[in-house]
Amino acid sequence: MDKIIRAVSSDGFIKISAITARVAVQRAREIHDTSPVATAALGRALCAASMMGEMLKEEKASLTLRINGGGPLGSIMAVSDSGGNVRGYVQHPHVDLPLRPDGKLDVGGAVGRDGMITVSRDLGLKEPYIGSTNLVSGEIAEDVTAYFVESEQVGAACGFGVLVDTDLSVLAAGGFIVQLLPGAQDELIGRLEGNIHRAGTVTEMLTEGGAEAIIRRILDGLEPRILAELPIEYRCYCSRERVLEAVSVIGRDELEKIVEEGEETTVSCQFCDTVYRFSAEEIRKLL
Ligand SMILES: [Zn+2]
Image (cartoon, rainbow, N blue to C red):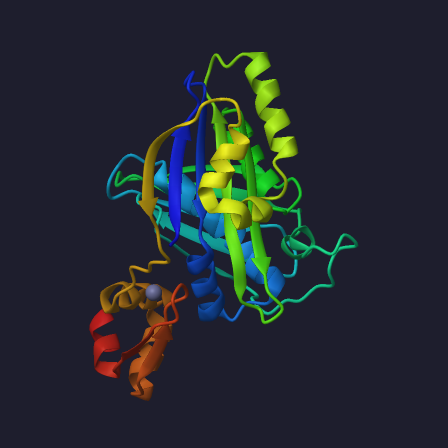
């Protein structure tokens, strides 16, 4: 089962969220028919958005993570509700790149690093709160870390991992976000850095024991106290009304053309591929 575990060190200075999201990332893979490197990039973004969304306190809030590095994958979008339920897509899901010399998927090369990571929090107010930072490597973990440090002025460290099998299915997916609270002493930070250095890869930790293993290894010796453990899933909130609303923004001329032609319009949801059909009469009502 996919879930987020949130914990804090016994002294209260380190917060950690850890996620296991194999089922959600596999669902994204099936919906978008992603190549391995696209699965890894989108999967990492989904994990990040899910944990960041779950950090929002307002019940109806949502968080949108956009990464556009100018690489062959184009832009990546991941949206989470405040329960960590997440959805997303990648602009060019079939992009395939050779493996890196170390045998890993070349996520950084596929995402590119010439661009921005943008986080938008919709808290139900008039305007969303938007922050963005230059990409560092396109590997996503370093980029999310830079976002926390530069845009939110929070000491942070992140790790994400997606392991894709030879049959393209997702063997493991997950990650963590660690945040330092103000006043954390250098000794504590040193200890945390040592733990992260020794922890091994995210997919190794996930294979060993899921999100629990991540918390255990990253907060080794810091007596983590579990604050919350909650299930998450790939969840889309699209509906006929919402999709029709999206259709209405294509502009009057286009809409009039559709009505004149009198044919049915089909629109599929970008996040879940559900197909919605609208009659010319329904489109006419938008005018
Ligand atoms: Zn949908």
